[in-house]
Amino acid sequence: MAQDAFEDLVETFEFLEDWEDRYRHVIDMGKAMDPMEDALKVPATKVDGCASQVWLHTNTDGGVLRFQGDSDAMIVKGLIAVLKELYDGLPLDQARAVDAFAEMGRLGLNEHLSSQRSNGLRAMVQRLQQVAGA
Image (tube, rainbow, N blue to C red; front, side, top):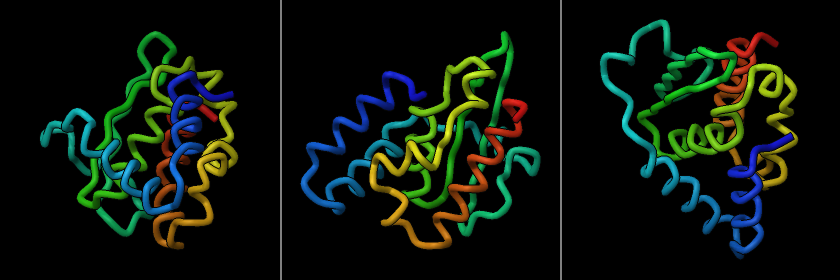
């Protein structure tokens, strides 16, 4: 079950005519994210399995999944922004129930990412699922 913000993103993607427009939108989402403090970019927050540098700083206070993320690659930073729309603010039990790959498929992202990007996305989702207690 996706959050309202993600449903809005699905609707936006339906209006974008081609993949290049969608790709640009994902990159713009990454650029619009609040910056992650350099002090949080430590080995404990680094996500292994990504071709680029990726950090996810998570918090589960109050039984809700919250996270910040950053990457040195624009498209990956945009994918973090997409994952924020999908996961950030969900109660942990709902976060565990999210089928991220099915949801991303609704955006058409699965067939347009390189295998390296797909592996990186998988690693980020696994980290979030692990934090949520899946």
